Structure formats: structure tokens, C-alpha cells
Amino acid sequence: MPVTRIPRASLHSLHLATALLVAGSAGLAHGQASKTLTELVGKAVPGLDAIGVTNVQVGEGYFSGSVPALAVPGQTGDVRISGFITGNTKEFAIVISLPTFKLTSYVPGLTGTGLDNLAFSGAKFVIAPAGTAGTTVSPPSAIASITGGSLTLPNGTGLQGGVDLSGQLADWFKNIGMPTTALPISGGVPVGLFTGKIAAGQVAQLLYPMLDLTITAPAPLLNSVPALIPNTRLSALSLRVDGKSGSPAFTLAGAINLADNRAVTISAKAGGTQQAAVQLTATNFNVADLIGVSVPGLNALAITGVTLSADAIEADLKLGTISARAQAFKAGNARGVALSADSIKFSNLVSAAAGTPLDDFVIRKPTWIYTQTAQANVSLPADVRARLGAGAPSSLPGGLGVTGQSSFAGGIGQLLSGIGMPSGITLPTNISLDPSIFGKPPAMPEVDLSFPVGALGRLLPASVATIGGGTLHIVHKGGATTVGVAAD
Image (cartoon, rainbow, N blue to C red; front, side):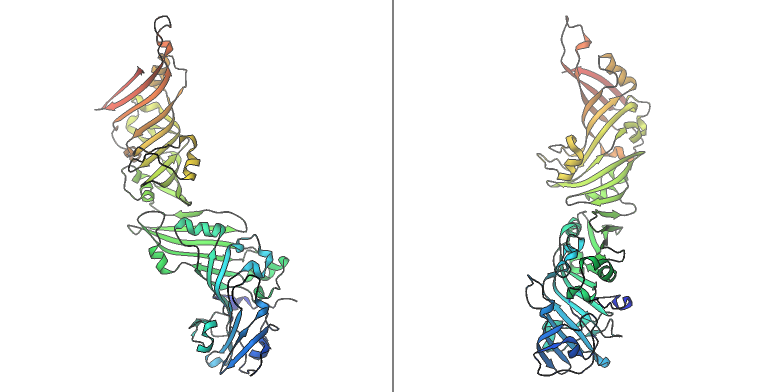
């Protein structure tokens, strides 16, 4: 039997609290224990004409009862229905109160889709008389257990109530620090959703075009939930679920206000089984914003394309002409940031290094990690460790540490060749630098760097002496650069 579709214009603003409001006449059947909904309201109700109502109770301008035909297995509580005359219309608004349920309980064809991640509670499906949209009414107290104390009527039909999130939708909220249960939801669904008349092959035609739900984080939560980014306040957040494209689509939108009132936009979008990360977009947003502390040098690194994960934030940034990826994280009691890139030439960061022995100092596959304070035996977040790989440290000394492989040309390269190192050799790197180098300092900063260079056997004939390992030292202090190799 085909499902009667309510015109799209009447579905524009549906509310999800499972109240079903329907237009009808004032004729009531008194003393009847079981009636159809059509008999109770005096006219056909599209999609619900033949639905039976049991345990009918009738009063002056209202009725109530149970609707066993709309119950699904595993539901806690009965499906209840009520109708009441609304103002001067002399027509009935009808409210169907639905206990806990999932959309897949009524439409098994939705199993495995993103809609399977919504679990409703305390919902009401509402059908309102024409011309009453947006009107707030107070139903008779005798049926308040079904309708609630007051009710804002939708434009046509509407669903409103609470929802628990699971799967990727829950991950989106968790990554922003929001709860995932008892969230208010409202919007539009077709009447046929609850009658079991939408088969698996019909969801694209009969369900998705009329699906338009919105989950909105209430104001108290927005003001009190701690954001992943420090010194910020979540100022808006909503999740919209619709099927206008012919399949379920999920769009997260919101905003974070930084301490100085700069706004950061939150967004994510996914459709069907597609996975999507939560993105942050802002202007004049920098690495220091991510870790909640002003750090000379780091403040100068503007970032875009920020992605939230459970315990870290990833962002694209530029180090001069070099593209890099930043991950802000919390380790122990300290917040930090890890930067990774393919290679960085020191003089691209510090222009004053041009023409000095450090001009041809290149760090390949570097990992730069900054933390405010030292953390021994630190456990970095799993996704940070995975990105850093072998470069992930087991402790954080505080400040800016750099790991990777370094290569040297020019005078330092000649020095290494002179002590028997192969041409183009790269040296393991584990050094500390002042983070101010990211701010393009006008003068060459002081550095004191050491690199293990391995065996020095070619310095002297083996018959004279055998030398094991050595260390390359590069020191810039007082305007002068000193380079040397010492045997260990």
C-alpha cells in the first residue's frame, strides 16, 4: 500500500519530540474502547488512516489512547497518542509519544547507514492543523503525560525529543569535548516512517526527501563544555541530518571563540558510510593558539586546514617556503606541538645563517617537538606516535627538540670528508633549538649543536692508532661560528 506523502512545504520545520499533531473535526466517539484514528478526529489522516487506537479516553476537546501497531520489539513503554482542539481552528492537533527507538526499528533498510547511529528517547511525532505553525499551545492537563506541558506546533508534521549518538557522529562530538547522549533533536520525517510501510528499496523515494533533522547543543552545554583547544569557548554547535541528495548526509557546524574573541569555525560533512574528520577554519590562527600559550617564534606560524581527533589537533602550516604538518597534543601535564616536514634548510628559517657554515645545514624528515615543561617517560597520544614513527620520543626535555637526519654541504661537508666520512653522509640528529627561529630572527641566534659522526678510523693509519666514534660540534656564539670534530 503506497504511503501518502504530505506536501514538502508542510514539512519545512518539523520538531522531534515524538508528538504527532493532525488536523481533524471536533466529533468524538464517547465510550469506545477501540477506534481508528480517522474515526476519532473525524477525517482521514494521511498515512495513519487505518491505525487503531486502543484504551480510548475522551474528554472535552481531547482524546488519548494507545497505538500498539506503532510499537517495535525492544521498546520500553507503550506508544501513546493524544489529540486536542487547537484554538479557533476547531481542528485536532495529534501527538504520538514514542518511547526509546531507532530509525532502523521501523525501517530495517537503514541498517548500516549513518542513520543507524541515532537512538531516540522521549520523542514525540506531531501533525498540526494548517495555519498553526510556530504557535505554542498548552494541551489539556489530562493528556500532558503524552504531549508535555506546552508544545510549539510544527509546519505540518514534526519530530522532537532526545537522541543518543554512536559511531562517527559520536566521535565528532567527543572530539570537540561535547556529550553524546540526551541531545535535543527536532525536524522532519515522513508519517510512513512509523507504520512499517517503507521497504528497503523505497527509502530513497519515500524517506530521504522528507528527512530533515537538526541536533543542537543547548546553551548551558555550549558555555560549560571544555574545548580541546585551551582558552576557548564553544559558542555554537549543530548537526543536521537530511536526505535531499538521495542518501543520508550529516553536516556538523559550529564555532569556537578564542580568548581574544577571534572566531574559529567548526565543520564536518559525511554521507552514507563515508568517513570525515572535524575541520576548524580560522583567519590569523597560529600554533600558539593550539597549545594555549604564547611562544616567541611559534606565534608567527599561521595555520589552516585544522583537523580534530580524539586527543590531538592536526594542522597544515608554512615554514617559510616549506610545507609542514603540525599536531597539537597534551602529554602528561604539558601541552605541546609536533611539526613534521620533508626537509628544512636552516638558512630558510634563519636568513642570517646565509653565508655562515650553517648555510648548508639541512635537516631531512625532521620532527620538531615543543613542550612548555619537561616530561619524563611521557606517553604521547597514539595518533601523534603513529605520525612521528621512529622519531617519537620517550621523554620530552621541554623547549624545542628536533630529531631526524642532517646533511651538510659547504665547509662542514668538506670537514666531514676530510675525516673520512662518505660524501653525502647524513648524521642522526637529536638537538635543541630556540623556538624563536620560527619568527625569522634578524640576527643569527646562538646555537650549540652536537652530532655523532661514527668511526674516525681514517684520521690516522691503523698502525699508528685506532679511533672509534666522534662528535661534530657546531657552536655559534658572540657573532662567531666554530665547527669541530672531537674523538669520543
